[in-house]
Image (cartoon, rainbow, N blue to C red; front, side, top):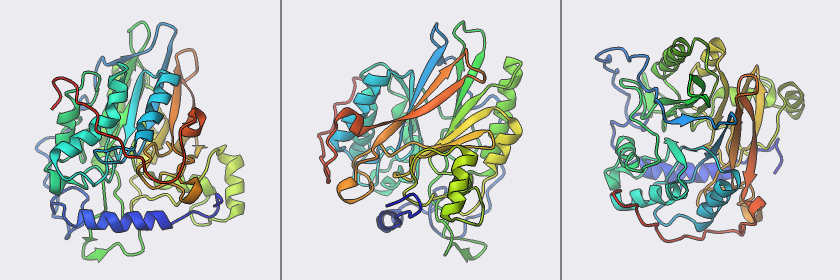
Length: 404
């Protein structure tokens, strides 16, 4: 399929299976399909700017460099496809990153017990733990699909992963929509100040069934960042600037794309023709593939406008749409995708199903203006990993001592 002919088939199949899973979910979960949501109770107090700022976990090397790897949509059960693990291990051994972000849909909805859900997570974090690499995760739309069966929600998953010695997640900002919204400042080589920031946001799960009695037929049915999350980003960004006497450049990681991803691909809001895309390639320096529509929420969150206003974030990267790999410069901010890492989730289909399994790498360098030195992709094919059709489920990895 071409860049101008996005595939909806596999997404439609996925939605059908997701609908069955979410129909069993508890009605009160954030973003879960159900009746009209009740008006949110006001928070007991406004979030403090410092909340969600994770201190003294990450720092640049003596040579002023730092490397980030983004894995996305590992999305499997307790018998994770063994090629997913092989890909993770190959990337980690090749790139030797300083921190890894698993950017949402860490697991799928197949676990039937709490043990299976924990095994599914354990399988894809062991490659970092075994190498002593710091790591964190964000949440996607599928991570709670098995909650009704397992009794584990995102908050429970955060408690679980914090048992690992190299995990750098925290509970995040209080009284803010979502789970684990936080920012990881990266200290300068001399430890004097924060010179970069990695923002981890929970972009939610699914739109409610109705709002004000109106359903979402004809609209995208995924979730979106809420105003309090955007406001927290602004406050925390200002707090980082205050502490460091300068704006701190950074990257944002969240699972679900912004509407601006699609606008960038076509250099247009309303028109979506090949000519529009050709214009966008030159205008926004687009690189990579778009094999399916961006599956956004029904509303524009305003996050991009907030990023423009603050002027600190250099890029916002997502997953969710497994067979999109593109990145571009949208009015001074890179918007992009990390390809789907997990071999157990949908891909391109047919003989090319697994062609785009991969990871995204980010290079930071204190000697570069604004610190962000660029990004590149690594694919399973680069490492000679088997790309044949179908699944190759492995056995669950052992838990580390003290992890239960």
